[in-house]
Image (cartoon, rainbow, N blue to C red; front, top):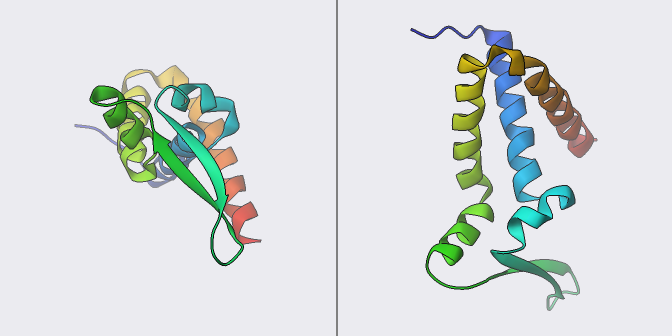
Length: 112
């Protein structure tokens, strides 16, 4: 059926991680999230800053906001997208490689 060697699997995993992070957290994609929720920074009782997410609207708009604010939810959809494109659009591999390198750099940076 489908064949995926271990190095390609590793690249797909890192690319999915980076794409998910890009959609859920990065400022460059805030225009995607802005219609569905807003993020407010508030100080808690211990003096620490916390992000509070406020959903906009009701119904489908609220549902999309809930999904876009969930790293795990977006991760599922991104993994489906990445795997579909990987198998059916082979020319996309360099794009996934760039995402994978950026994902690996983000993991390394967060551990140092």
